[in-house]
Image 1 (cartoon, rainbow, N blue to C red):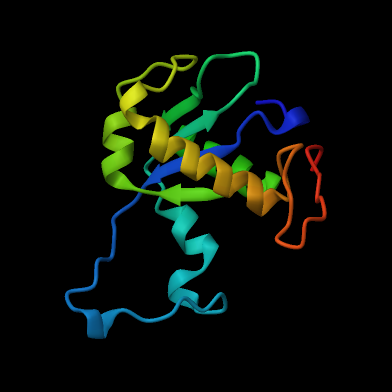
Image 2 (image 1 turned 60 degrees about the vertical axis):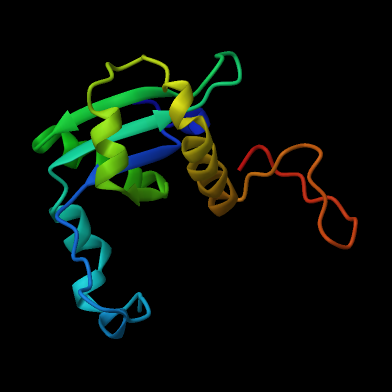
Length: 143
């Protein structure tokens, strides 16, 4: 898993979701809240799939897939590299049967593109032709 060129642009993890039973139970996320700390979330990772995009390939592909200790290693590396970790058990269930190196099915392009673009945005990466609302450019493809 190379650190150069951020070859792991998104990590998909499957965890036991804590789904609120009613809207009243939903509360804002507080980064200091012990129940929602990254450490506790990462400790629960039992399965993970890393999705990467290379401009030389036609579509995003599975760059790593693992369960138990390998899943934890994938998540730990993502944390170390400052990558976005997206938790979505339903999406994971659609990706878990793919092999490493296999391209993402066309049916998942929109959701994967959305997640990857959000991940890039969080990393400070922007497309070359990106323009701010005021018309100025904010080009940073090397972040």
